[in-house]
Length: 217
Image 1 (spheres, rainbow, N blue to C red):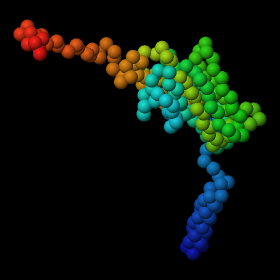
Image 2: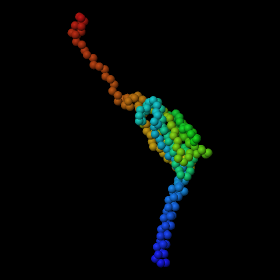
Image 3: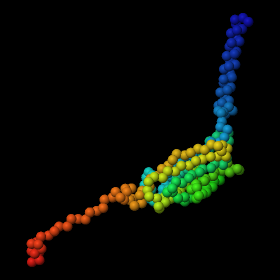
Image 4: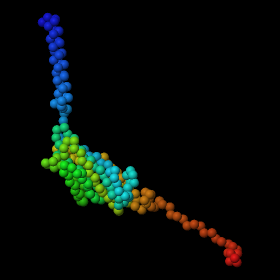
C-alpha cells in the first residue's frame, strides 16, 4: 500500500469512529440507551411533625399530656424498571403515646391502616395486586396519636419503617422524631419539687403603749 492509500485508510477509520460516537450519542439522547436500572422498586419513608397541630402544642416540638400529636409520614417509590408492588409502613408507638387514627390521602392508589394494641404497632399499606405503588409514586399519611394522661413528662421518640413486595428483604427506616412532654404538674416544665413555696409575711408586733394610745382615740 502506497503512502496516499495509507492516509486515505487512516482517514476513513477516523471517520467511522467519529460516526459511531455520534450514533451512540444520538441513541442516548433519544432514550434508546438508558443507564443501568434497579431490578426492584426502592421505597423510602420520611417522618416529621405535621405543620398542623392542635391545642396543647408549643412549637417546635413540645406538647402537654392529653394533647394530640400529628406525624406526617411520606412513602416514596423509586425504580427505573418496575413498580413497588404493595408498600407496608410499620410504626411502633412508644410508651406515652396512644393511637387515635391514620388519615389517608385521596387518590387512585388504594391504602389501608390498622392498629395492633398488643404490640402498639400501626400498620399502613399502600397499593395492591391490581393497583401497585407506581414508580415515582409518593403518598403522605397523617398518623395521629395522643399523649397519655398518665405520662409524667419527658421525651417520646417515634420512628417508621417501610418495605415493599418487589424487594421484601429490604427495610428502610425514617429519621426519629422526638417530642417533649411537659410535666403535667408543672406547665412550665419545671419539677414540682423544685418550685419554691410562698413564705408567709412577717407579723409586726405592736407595743403596749401604741395599743393603749389607739384605744383612747
